[in-house]
Image (cartoon, rainbow, N blue to C red; front, side):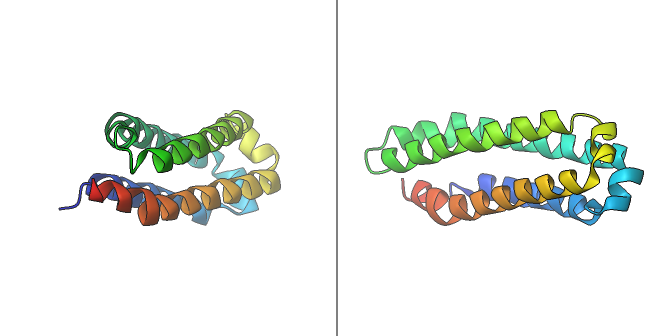
Length: 136
């Protein structure tokens, strides 16, 4: 069992939640199912926050203490700050089902951007960050 297995499993759970949101990214669903969409987003964000908390208290603590991993860990932490800021802004913009239903096209575009950023981050963590963590 690799040290990163827990984190990789959490990524799978995040992507499963994204898979439940993606089919709802159409104008009709954004209007008719905005409460369901908002509930799904709340679940996704909760799971993201839990994942980040575990990374901060387990993965980054160990990596920042290791000279060969410190620079990579610091870079990933800095980048995550920008993603957290974007996610917070997104959640504020679509804080209610009414906000989602009011502008479906904007909501869909913004959500697709968030999903892409999340997917890109997961790929990079799994190929670079977790690979390095497994060697420590």
